Image (cartoon, rainbow, N blue to C red; front, side, top):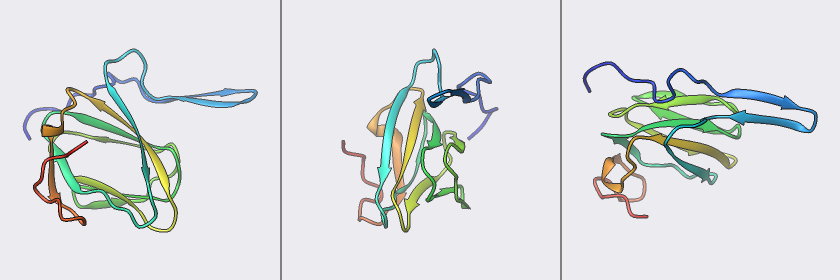
Length: 130
């Protein structure tokens, strides 16, 4: 990976707006992106993979997640965020309880953009299938 990493949110960080009835986490506003809500079951682990084109923002909705990014392990808390840039090898997993992640993808989203480096389910090197 070469060159400076561009912030796809242009410096606009997530804002928490507290209301009398609860709160809103405004993750991305007024920007072209793809958004996925990902649920991970206890014992489930995603492939160690990377992308060449898209940048992903992981917004963890629940506690209980484990995240590996370029060999470093994190235990994100609810509403903690990580920006995953092209070329970064990453995966997430659940041990004892399920969790959810809001995945916001910036840049063109294609199945061809994901490369699996390691996979617990025998899919290493195989193209993503929806």
